[in-house]
Amino acid sequence: MSDLILHHYPKSPFAEKIRLVMGLKNLAWTSCDAPDMMPKPELQALTGGNRRIPVLQIGADVYCDTLLICDVLESIQSTPSLFPTGQKGLARSLAQWADREIFAAGMAHNFSPAGGAEFVRMNPDVDIKAFGADRAAMRGGAPRMFPGDAAAAYKSYLRRLASMLESSPFVLGDQPSIADLSIYHPLWFTRRLAPLADILNISPLILPWMDRIAALGHGQRGAEISRTDSLSIARKATPVAIPSDEVFQDEHGIPLGTEVTITAESFGTEVTTGTLVAATRTRFTLARTHEWTGAVHVHFPRIGFVLKKAES
Image (cartoon, rainbow, N blue to C red):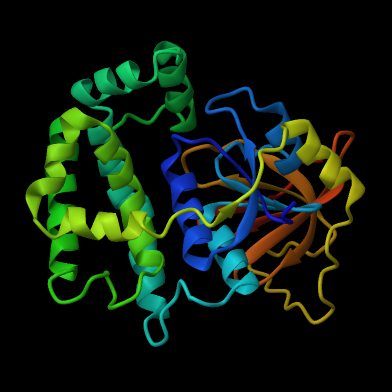
């Protein structure tokens, strides 16, 4: 069994992004199916509260958010790289734009009345009222974009993508990067909804590019393991020690060893509480203990998450 355990579910666009990273890097990984809506007791035992998918588990180390998961997979297998030499900053900036702006517009368009009806047809076992309530809770009550506004924004972003593809097969050149995979995943969901897929024909460059991304595959996907087995793996493992030379970057006036909380800035703001054991330039690490998992380290990227001292 691979050391990499990906907690995900098939319909998740962000999970598809990481599955494609596995494909690009031809990594071996183990799949653990997570619920597509709350409750998620096993996942939250691992993360301490974070409910967002995907989550990467390596023994007793748990990595939240695709921003950080991509960095972890890059450190494990550096080639092919997600971050082209000389274009790392651009690749990361495009990925961040895609994850926030394209995803928001794309998914609002995807769940327009026509898209929602197709989603129900494709997923007859889903309780659509419960699913809608779950996603509204994830948004913290914030309204989704109106379908007309979403379609207009989505078309604008698709035209920008087409412009990027005019002189090269991928967004930043001859090889795929994190920019491609981040732009791709909401479009992947759109393509699955037949009544809405025509929007992708706004340029003849888009669907062939999507085919090139899809051809990356999902790497060496191993046998499925149960959620209880993933908890057992964490319980039998020990979190990787924090390197003694790990730089502590204090932006909050919170020393290491303090009980803290971490929440996402938006969309899925469940609270994770633990002891701050690392705060580097790019990530936070919390030490936690749960009866199902034993001692674990839960890692979050700095970008997109809020660190606070826990209330006593």
